[in-house]
Each structure stands twice: as structure tokens, then as C-alpha cells.
Length: 111
Image 1 (cartoon, rainbow, N blue to C red):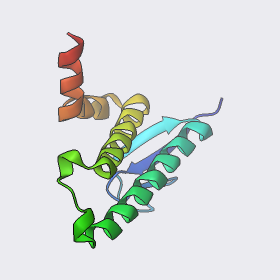
Image 2: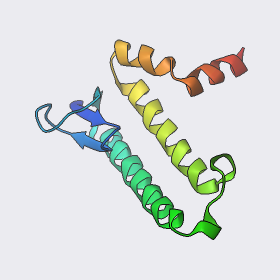
Image 3: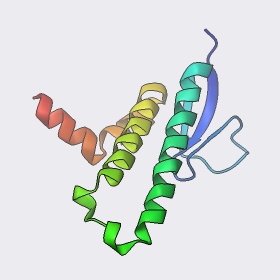
């Protein structure tokens, strides 16, 4: 399998083939199929964001963040993005991601 180096921007939810295309946060090395997973996750994040944007304009539909299923969907997908970045990125990026709160809680539970 051929590995490709791509550049991931979680902020803009994009995968870039070249580092000069735009600002990016993570460099990953993965196969084409694995890169497609990043693209699919970003597409899903954008879909959830769009639905949440529309719901935010309907006061009767707005729920507190911690009991809102739509927000949970967004959070789960964002965690998957970071898990995939962790899987295919440099050691420095892995160490940074491991310091994120949800990774630390996961480690505590496993102990």
C-alpha cells in the first residue's frame, strides 16, 4: 500500500495535499482509503454543524449542551478525527493529542 503525506486542519475541517494550500495543524501519513475516512468525518461534522445552526434559530428546539443529542454527535465525530490523527501523525502530535481531556479520562478509566 502506498502511503501519502497530507495536511489536516481540524479548524477548517479540511484535508490538504500540499502544505502551502492553507494553514493546517497536523501532518499525517496514510493510505488513500484512510485519507477518505478523514474527509468523510469532516463532511459529517459539517452536516451536524449545519443542522445545529438551523436549530439554534428555533428557541423551542434549543437544549442545554450536555443533554443535546446533536451536540453529542458532533463531539463523537470530533473525537474520532483526533483518534485518526493520533493514529497516523508524528510522535509530537500524538503526545499533544494524548494530553487532551478526553484522552486522559479514557486512560484513567482503563487503569
